[in-house]
Length: 213
Image 1 (cartoon, one colour):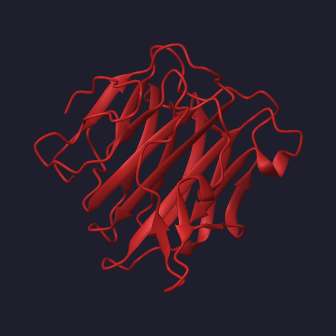
Image 2 (cartoon, rainbow, N blue to C red; image 1 turned 90 degrees about the horizontal axis):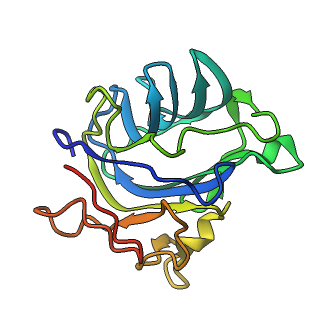
């Protein structure tokens, strides 16, 4: 992924206030800032899921330079040999402020944050019509993801749990993938399995969206 930018322009969302992104990743750029997912509107107006240079995980929503929703983990992710399953949930309509943004890693919800800013009820995110969806990079092609990615899924209109994308293996106790596209992707939803290195942007969801690489 280190030199690839996969992107498309969002259409009108099923629900701007409710969505889930899931990705299986293996880091290659420890100590670098790395984007996993971004919905981009302008240079200081975007929604993103990324690793900071300190290897913490940062899920944020920024409007004109102000973060109106942000979770930064205290936990760091620095094992280049490990696959991490990361799920980020945006649910701005949720009646419980602490449930409006969630991060799961390998099936477990992250609960310890150095920054924990809850969005206001109904706060818009930047996965709206005309916003740009970037995978593995930001909109100016910096902080590219330097490792491996697989089964990157975006579900528009549903706040899902990690168990919708993975499960614990009964024999080994290891968190494992549920292969296959989520059944109800919503208008802007997609599944990039990334099984073919010559066709990383193939959407195998029922939407079959066209991306650019």
